Image (cartoon, rainbow, N blue to C red; front, top):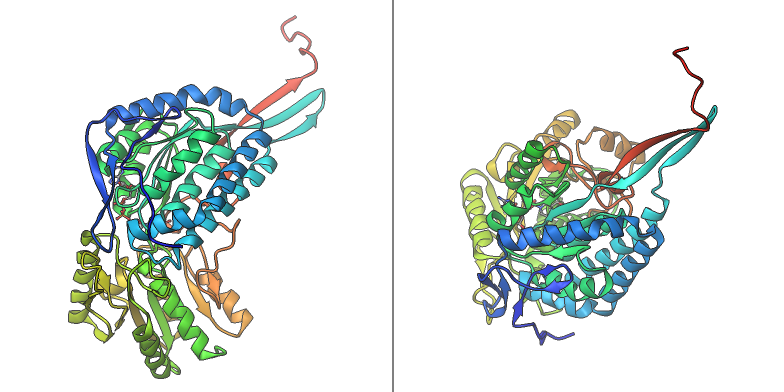
Length: 489
Ligand code: NAD
């Protein structure tokens, strides 16, 4: 694999099967590490969104009537295309968003699995029918209609697949708005989307949140909104859904606890896994294990090993296969993370890291040293989502107090537990207010497992068969063999 990826000079929206722009505005996609221009992208506006929604609406009756097996077949074709083009797509993401080339292929493999998973799940996602005296009661599943979907920049391939796979499998048509910082791999995917799906079934409009995103959110012909991103924008989307009474699913942020019990086997492995939990995706993961609760008995030993592991993490060019930590997606994100680090230096004890790192040849990149603070659960760095490689370590001794603290943030997306006692693991898992609990292996994503959050982390579940419930509604049809005898004489 090499970094000599050729890009189209200009990427346009995919509307009704054509690459076309109504907007005359554009923006540049730049290499997150070097600052070099990669391509120019149409800055979609309300006119593009209106055309895309109209195309999706026109395509809906035929797509909804397409037998589910045929829809599934097309999703498998999309999965095949991603597999064939995986190296190139992974390199595009590494250049576009600064994630390492060691990681970005994993995103595309997860995407492939999503297309295949929903192709299979849709076939078995049926309604039911019950014979009743003199007839039948039927519950039939129907798609919702045109779905509006908005995604963030951190894992664009996964986000695109999480959104379009279940929506299409269930018979909806859609308009997707990728993030302005990470549109390129999704726009490349449009080559396959245009070839594989009937015109208008999938439409993609790149652009800004307050322009294309807001137009999509407010569009009266959109029957469902699906969003992944910040809690702040999630609330805007939820209000828009409430105004028009359309269902909304939200995947928002996280500040996940990762809990180490003193009975763990193989401390070095746990240290390594906890470091991975905090730094994978350059720490720009809503799932990241960013609050590490270490039991008092092992605290000092664990922390000194953790410091060594963090100091050994190779920070470097995202396209270098030996790099373990690339750069953040943008200057805005870099400054935000450094601001959190500055407040950490005021309110907590810095263990390691804490500065911007320089990587020769990549001067535009916002590389951040893998950073560890010792702190308590009330500090700003322990309460707020940082979205960078910054870990808050919290000492614990009292179990109930630790559980209260683990649950004591506005989010509830993921959590981790390390223990050799299975009963302890299950008891603790029961008490954590989080959509996912991983025991002894953080980020252990399994296709088909529910993914979503408690309270401030969102509404709904993706990644699993139940996601199809969010993209369908049930109609009840009751058939009587005969019209009943007259009641009125
Ligand atoms: P963001 O909410 O600013 O942007 C996400 C998307 O929303 C982008 O496509 C953006 O253009 C769009 N958008 C922005 N303003 C909008 C508006 N007014 N109307 C409609 N659309 C609008 O989020 P971000 O800062 O780019 O991403 C980071 C956040 O996303 C973090 O908080 C992170 O935890 C969260 N996230 C959550 C998950 C998850 O699955 N739970 C996954 C990835 C990221």
